[in-house]
Image (cartoon, rainbow, N blue to C red; front, top):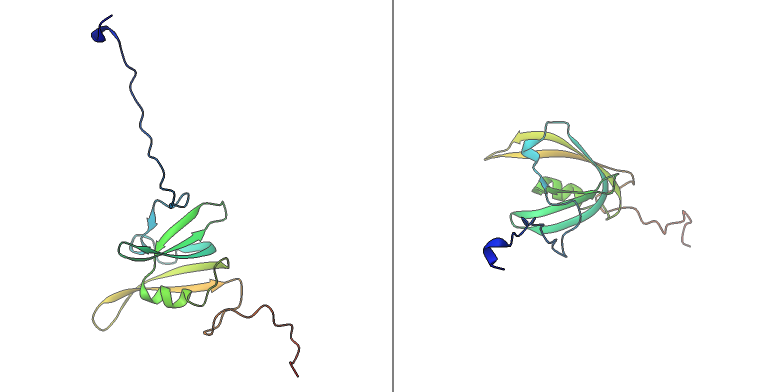
Length: 129
């Protein structure tokens, strides 16, 4: 039997996942490509170091994760949000600054957050004296 007579079926290739990848996070949401008023809602999972800056991760209601770019303004807003909190990020569009334009956002949380950070849940309302 010669090799020429032996047929080999066509191979199908599948990407081997990176063990550090989170599921469903291959795409990064680009704020410049979404309409003004776009809302990203889910459980905040924190940020990762990306090739071009920080990347935020939100777990969506269906269990999938969404990665998104974290510009400076959004990073400041998210700095008072704890991992695991339910949040809603609303894209407000571009705003002109002194030297450049920048993306603007409103960030909402299901838990009251202040500039000092999220409230201390161990506070039982009692005055400590």
